[in-house]
Image (cartoon, rainbow, N blue to C red):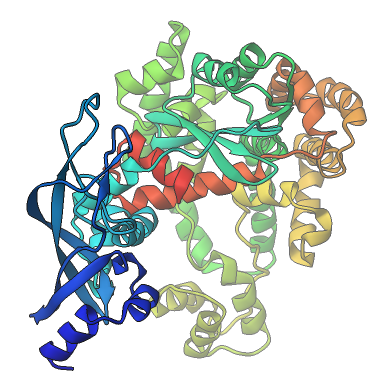
Length: 546
């Protein structure tokens, strides 16, 4: 289409067609249009003969002056559009009106002080809410939209907050601005799964003030944080507090892992005895080298360093200092400091060092022994077979391990002892979901360690109470678990008693914080889009409105 055709189509007398195709230009007279580069420029003027005063509402026909506004508009045919609108300023005819002159506005096209049309602003706002500033500016030109990064962020900040409505079931959980440093609070309507509000911290007073300003919450689903319990109790004393079942299970899993770690020596000793018995059944040339290595392991530098750190941590512990202070003074990783702080003896912290690092081949040794004794002595073939099963090590490692077996049978192989996280996962899972090997390993471990056997039994009972919402059985479970020698489990029970009513409600009522956790994950995605540079007010707008 030529420029003259563009101008005639837009500026012709086809009022009805223009109103259908470009409704925001229906209130104007398009004088001409030109294409310059990738942009379409449109010259227009208002069609109305009069304008109303924004202060008193009266109409005026007396023109004071004219000026031209430059408005960016939504794309037409993939081209960015710029409208050069001639605007008239009118005298106000009302003698008592405080406004002497006023500029005319075209419905659907202009807004006071705006340099974009409402149609373009609406499109850019949708892009900004979905992608924020930088990513939004990369997408906007592909859609034929004109926008800058800060302009798109201003569009988000100009949006009004959603209308506050009473929330019957409120979900409360924290989220991290910077993990391990600063946190905020997310409030969710559990019935609808939509965000209600965000708070800049996770203090009890902040939550209590919000609840007092927004009454009506009958049920509050929260995690186990004491600040949220106190804030809910102060701000909404009549509300029913419900401890989330996922957080209950997560807390139990943490205490169960501590128990498994404390008694992991029972497992390693059992597997060491099995390996020694297997070695006595047949010649193992590699055993002498292993024993020689173990004899010198005590003198290795990392063992000596572990003993020194243990003595330093225990000395500070005897002075009454907590883990946080010890971590700061000795400049240790928090996990390392906690492990040394809770260890009953130095042997517990150096046990893993003495046994050496696990080999990538450990999980495949039983298969190698079985194939070797069945007559397959081609090491290259065996390497290809275990590689197909997932082995990621080198051929040299397999060759060095199997070379002593040449010309003789391989002794029965004992798999490497399962790690703490593996045992914990077996205990926490539904027994029916374990495969045969996992069930056999867990049964063997429970037979060797009474503490882990009792732990598995207590965890299974609590899982049935939690999944079946049998809160009436909680007291009996607490009594049975408290009677055993399980210090970590007793610590978990102490926390349950401290928050007893909310825990009982969580194990009885159908409410949970699953929808809250989903929105917390959504916040992580929004933060990544903004590369961690978003302030709280911008993040809050995107969470509530996107």
